[in-house]
Length: 550
Image 1 (cartoon, rainbow, N blue to C red):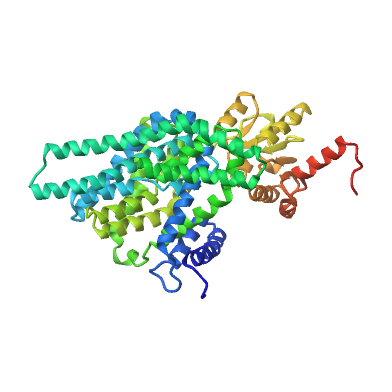
Image 2: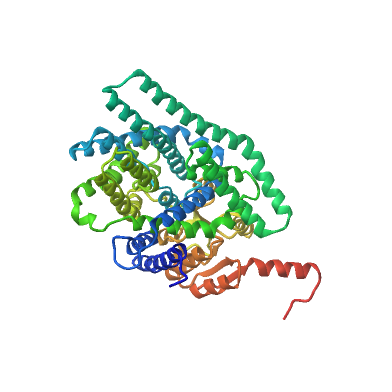
């Protein structure tokens, strides 16, 4: 390939392998993330064949983290963040302390210094942003109470790691001075205190600027661009704001890219254009998130599993078991629901990007042995692979929400309907069905909305329609009609497929955005597919008195 460049080769081959192994993982009923990690191992330096540029991969993956956190910020208001501070702040700090102590204990057994044990424990304490958010988004719980707690917990962990990244070089320099001077002095203690205060001051200054200046400037820019009438410029403005704020936060205030992007998204979320901004960045978020997992896989040496298995299992145990138990205990202290505690424990039972950064910095400063870095990397890979299984265990241990006992939810009731998704379309359907005295039940993944429907006396089931168990809880086997109103075509297709398998005679209505989705949904068994574009066009034709086209 004479004209190939490292970047083009990495994108082409990395995404190609990610697609292939992601497909294989999905066919094996595993998370596609496992396939992406395997793709990284295949193109990494420890396996034969093509070797991708790991430096380029890590930078591309960082863009993925920025865009992903930006997207979460679009749907996570400041009010939501403050609403969980009483749990997220003490909970995250307590879990960091617990994991650090476990890491220190393991480091002592390995014969490392106290400093190495502390850095090792810190690296094991912080969850991966990408993995956690992907898991929450797959379960569509980001905007629920437990999702807000998990995201708030993650933000506190990121802030703690930012502080650690600033203080570690300071401590390494002080340690050299202490070794040269033969002991600790008050001047060195004052230097540590000043470094901590400066870090906290920078983070605080960034947050204040975003809340005071950014809250006015970012929506103003978006509205000006929209008035220009160019979708391309709007997309560019959204990406420029997300990446620009993330870079500015890192360069000027020492705040992580991820945290900076999160606040940019949170401020932009105050604008009525937030939904459009989220849609414009979605394809890039997905593509770069895949590159993140590929880049992690490239760092893993499979021989570590053979050469150093027991210490690796110890590190993995701290991440998956130790952190989970600590999270469960902390949530129990705050008297949280079992399902909330299980979700938090499963979400945080893995490590990722911050762990790699801490490990690299620790080795570079001489605070951490290289063997410890290999253990951190191996624990990260294995914990990410095992995370879907941890969620499966958490789901098994969490009591399922039972459907409300009413005539509507009882099997065999004549003329019963199910509405999947109770947003703008689903709620209008519900009103029409109620006015026609048709009994119906609702499947909705937003817990707060389900509780409101319960208060109104409507049977609603908290869950995702792509789950056969959720559809069974709504008694889909005995329903006559099902309306699938979720806007995601892939998700709708899966719901159609499962509903048809569980009840071959049910009449299925679904929505679509284009002709390709119509064919997709009909192929899975939908009886009637309503296209928004077609209905809007027909309404305009009717309003102008034109004849319906043949």
